[in-house]
Length: 317
Ligand SMILES: NC(=O)c1ccc[n+]([C@@H]2O[C@H](COP(=O)([O-])OP(=O)(O)OC[C@H]3O[C@@H](n4cnc5c(N)ncnc54)[C@H](OP(=O)(O)O)[C@@H]3O)[C@@H](O)[C@H]2O)c1
Image (tube, rainbow, N blue to C red; front, side):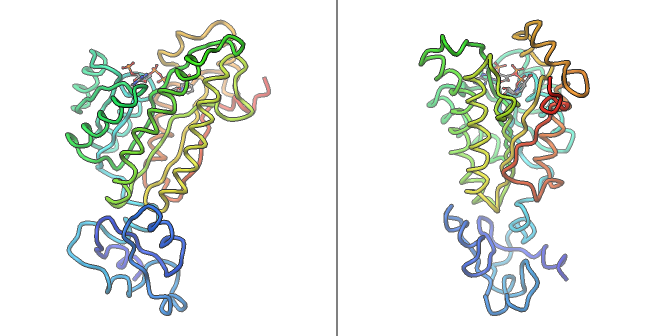
């Protein structure tokens, strides 16, 4: 019976909840229409959607109760926008999501051969805009959604790690650290999240860093560590704001072999090998964690930062 109920159609852009309950409260907070289940029937019913919800629901729409409760829309064959996918972890994530059957939209700061080559490999469209530039980011994400469809999966992997000694850091350095690492995520998600919620759900995964996790913040890159900590905090705020329709999580990679290794000196390489597994991660090993959090397998996970660091944080080195 429960399985049959879960497939019943209700209006897109709405939520289902008990009168005065959490779902009703949150749906109203994000201005998503809410279908309130009769509270008298609720007393005798098991948790979850009831027949009253189905009877009251307009029919003939594409979304089902399963898509609106229990963690948002089904995450298969969706449009997946991967910000910062021209290289590194983002490119590996685009490959992983493509392998899961998603229609991936690739993104880089500017059009270039790497981005174009990945587009050919995955038969995926590409978009390019500077996430550190507020106006360009706002315009870019709106254009991308208009041209390629509103995504159900959004991965934010764009980031830069410039090593600036704390004592020398200027206002420009601080703004630089927060521009692409945090600001871009804000501009993109401001545009997409209300629409994703209204569309019926989705999943967001922000790529943070172990440097944003208190105990593994860096003494060398304090500004980057601060920015990544802010991303973890944003993950929690947005998970609360957009529950239950959109899940928002983060992955915090440890040392990973990407173009960022160009910034590693001998000390960084030593650290990269000092985790419990004795080696840095490959980009696909981070991508699989991102793809997991974006998938239905993580339907009951939101507001979390998943550390993928080969045990670096536990190694005590
Ligand atoms: N590699 C590591 O060891 C490591 C560890 C922890 C966390 N992380 C995090 O993981 C994420 C991915 O890192 P990665 O190692 O894969 O980096 P990467 O290989 O250097 O790739 C960075 C990506 O971000 C994009 N990007 C950078 N600045 C941008 C801007 N202003 N506007 C738009 N796009 C921009 C780049 O686009 P273009 O190619 O067009 O420049 C590229 O696609 C980052 O957030 C990073 O902080 C990495």
